[in-house]
Image 1 (cartoon, rainbow, N blue to C red):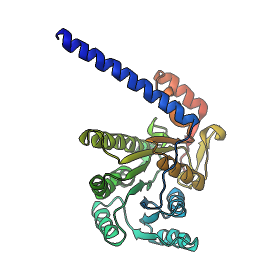
Image 2: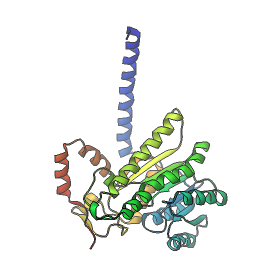
Image 3: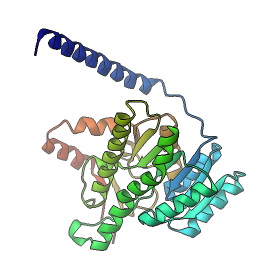
Image 4: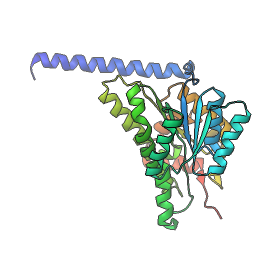
Length: 305
């Protein structure tokens, strides 16, 4: 390396340090000064798992903001109920489609129907998810396959279905509901936790891929949300030693926070918000120290009777 190349490298390193410092300051600034929330009126929002729980409340929340809402759920009856409840509120720009998001061909077929009847989806909310609280060796092969198909494979199918139109228009937002379980495999979460970690990795990889290929010009946003236990009934026997710290929110409150995270362009957000920085800080510690902290917090789920 000659002197000229050395000077260029030094300049690059100094510029990198300045950028890192700037983004640290920016991140701290947003803690105290919330970001402005984007409008949703002209957006077409598709929510998977809209028939119940968080998905239902997300559909209602976006409808109340004036967006056109597309409800997807494998359960046709509850999905229709969500649509009907929204219409009773006076919001008519809502559509319901039965769709098994774990079925690749069905996702592509129903996605094409949505394009023809509603338009191009501009906000995709991958919310559908299932969890089975069991020890690994007590899971059946079908249960393992089903959790993986719904919790992670479905994200690939919906992204392949709706991301191309977002890339073409250079406009769109993808929201994925992961879990704080993505950061540490927990007892009885041997199938569930890895799928939520995979969601985190997938969202990061797609974001970086678009950033690289567009040379930083992509305007498509990605938001990954990490809730703690939400009172949806998914977990029948939650174990929460410190509810005020861990959070134990209703689907309505969780949905409101998820929508705010999307509208404020957060790339990552936990519910409650303090869990994400705590999770990253804890991971710096030795593994045995981490296990001591988690044992003290005693946070998880017990096997159902």
